[in-house]
Image (cartoon, rainbow, N blue to C red):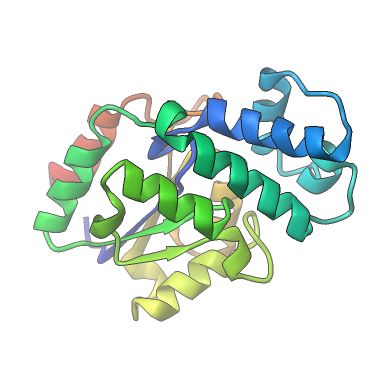
Length: 207
């Protein structure tokens, strides 16, 4: 694999955060006076690139500072009870670092909750760069995060690989002209995707 940089989505790819995301969104809805949404509906909507998430979850045109504050507040108070790494992910990241790859995260999560999550799960030091929703003008499916990572790590698009679990990730990779691998152990279901971390490990390391 002639790549220098491997970029990972976080939620649904590295981290099983489905419960925390659903609960955090419902926590924000509660502060706004809205009834809770079903977890399954939230998770289906999270990766639906045709929806405006601010409108879908909070009946707003865009996310605002209160949404971020309440979402991060829930994350801070609950990530240690609800977040787990997918089995095999930490071993894969360590193996990739030993082989000399640059590692990065591109996530539509907020920076505060992202860093708290990765630190708690003890993988934060493995990444050379992290770009979050509030670091760029537009989150995925726009390519802003990927362009930022390429710039920060001095890589060309053809030297990078992006690994994610949803259409927002795939669309961002396509727009940035970065190679993409879809995985399917997260929130969504795909017909053409890797089903197990062992399969991804084999693709990335058995070369």
